Amino acid sequence: MTHATGKYADFEALRERAVQLRREGLSRRQIRDTLHIDNNDILNRLLEGEPPPDWTRRPNAKDDLRDRARELRLQGWTYDRIQVELGCSKGSISLWVRDLPKPEQSSRSDQAKLAARKRWEHEHAVREAERSRTKEAARLAIGRMSDRELLLVGAALYWAEGTKDKPHARRETVTFVNSDPGMIQVFLAWLDMLGVERRRLRFCVMIHETADVPASEQYWADLVGSDRDAFYKTTLKKHNPKTVRKNTGEAYRGCLVIKVLQSAELYRRIEGCWYGIVGAASASDPSNWT
Image (cartoon, rainbow, N blue to C red):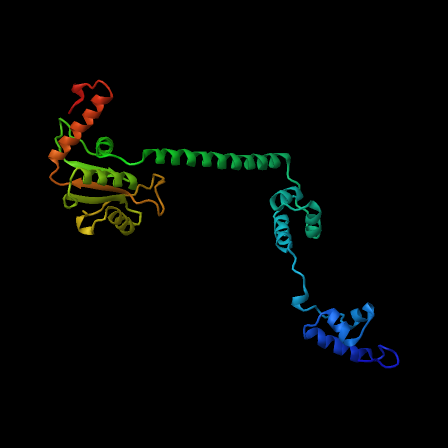
């Protein structure tokens, strides 16, 4: 294309053509070459007010950092805190947030509290990691258990958490109560090892009346692998408005009672096994026997 006497005499027609090409997605270089314009000032005037097409825009790798820096600045963060958080220079931060209001100066006590909180968070994370390592090492150290080991564990477990016979109240029945699913699973494995058939087991849920009772009943039924026919009616604990309960929320499932039918002989075996453990560990006093 040529331009009359003055190369850019028909400026408006030229601008109209340049704008059209711009809106078709051409770059500045393509428009310049198409219209034979060799003056950047003229090209700027022709395209004034026309945004570049999306494909010509260079992606800015720091856009996300800039947005995050502005967000933190609006929350009252200092340049130092933003720099530590985002890992970018203070110069960049200053450029990105200079139009935002400055945060109020915090007192020395506030700064000390912030430093203490950061230090506590770090130390807490270190302690939690150490706890996890210790627990995992102890778990792996157990390995497989023999029947004898399970026999000893189960007897001790029952003597701690099960009902016991007393001279003034003879009740040689095996009844175990606990809220810990792991304890329940170990106790059932122990009964299996002793040859106690599952059909001899009866269950009962004991739970606070304000809890989700149907969900808890189903939870325990699934855990022990038994249908609801083996469950007695759930025992509900009445609410005392004077007490502040901590056993609340979805994780609260109450306690499970496991009762073994026709278990007098089994109870005597458990008691004998327990005192065998006591005798093996130290000199036992027979007067403590029930």
